Image (cartoon, rainbow, N blue to C red):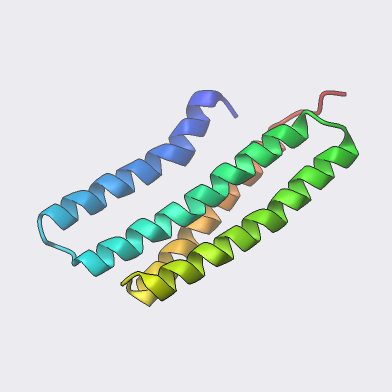
Length: 126
């Protein structure tokens, strides 16, 4: 995947969604609770994707054993990080639970597809 298309498919939809949410919030079309639900629902999978990108990038430059250790270790780390962040948001922030969970789910699936596309396009250095 080319660098420009990777940017277009990963960051640009997130930024468009964020700008749309800000415009809706500034026009008072959505409540602060719903805005927070969507914002955190987009941000947590983005953090997960960013961490995965760095783990995968570091792993692709290593041997096969180190690649598996970095990717699978990173996967476990990202899973627990995402779980902790979701619990913190649901417990301590005033978010709409259904909107938040739905946004996290859709964003997570989207970033997972992008991550698979990025990994499948890489060629090993052997």
